[in-house]
Image (cartoon, rainbow, N blue to C red; front, side, top):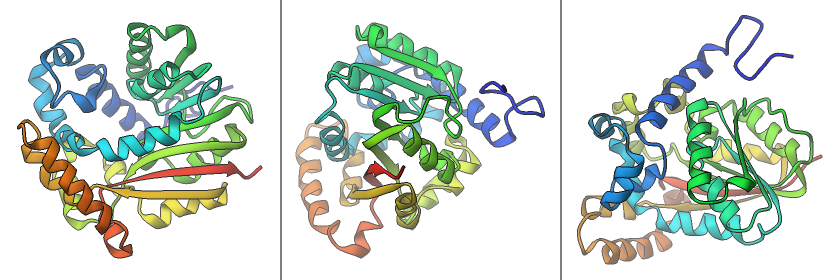
Length: 288
């Protein structure tokens, strides 16, 4: 049987090889809590940013994640509400922050997979640091062809990875490994806002060509109904983007809160929903 890095031609196809190289580079620069490093205290940057001279270039978009508290809170409510004692998967785990958090929240067993060996190693190390290493297992695996048995997991978590993958394969595999009644909780950037998408195209050093060409839209998100009976979608971060330049000032929290209230109204309107930066999606009841 071919291993996770092998094909009949002797190596993963070019798309996946580029993803490995891209992920390895980023995970060597920042080994944990990357979305907090832009506004973090000195200790977090000291412990997890390993190459400061490369950080500013390869993580210049991290400032955008300073406004994600509302989408993170919504995701966390979905993810951790019924996780105690469950077997869960951190799908395309990166440095493993969410897998570690699921273990800390009471998951009985956490598996994490990623295309990058550097990421899997970082995640294993982070689990040890956070004292949940006995309940976490991170490994290199092809997310489009997983080695897990059918009906293995109660919950699968995914963050910002579906647009790196063949979407049909991702939905097929996650629904396959979920138990009947299981849930897939996803957070994904959207492609509909022309200003945001233009920024992606102007910063290609931060991403792969496949990635920028496959950012999800609402139709792609809803295509998951082929593999899941229920899809619930919530939109975040439009007006809130205006708070980013103030992220390191005292006024930031209050200003962001006011803009989040504006988004709470705007993002109820169908047209404006699609202009949001991020959607949090819950796919449930996989079709078996």
